[in-house]
Image (cartoon, rainbow, N blue to C red; front, side):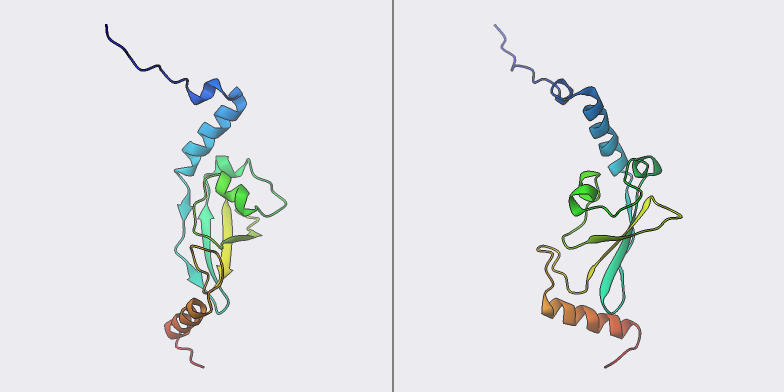
Length: 129
């Protein structure tokens, strides 16, 4: 007698077909999300995230995304990032910022990290004071 473990039903057995399709679409699309290098000014660090155009078509066009929303479509970043602007000519590019000195684990601004980041920024551009 050979015993086989019971087969587990596929996720699709528990979800309406439209939800399952949406989850497959997001998983496939999130693997094609591109992230810029970070750049900064005296107040914030910035980055932009380029979504596949077919994924961007599913997003709201007239408002910014909450953290839960951008994470739910597969954008992966450390804590503290805020979607702060819509780039109208290219709505598939999400613009993010966070205050200099943000602790990537907590999302809170650490005064010492902020001081060091500002010092680095000023050093890059020959600014002192």
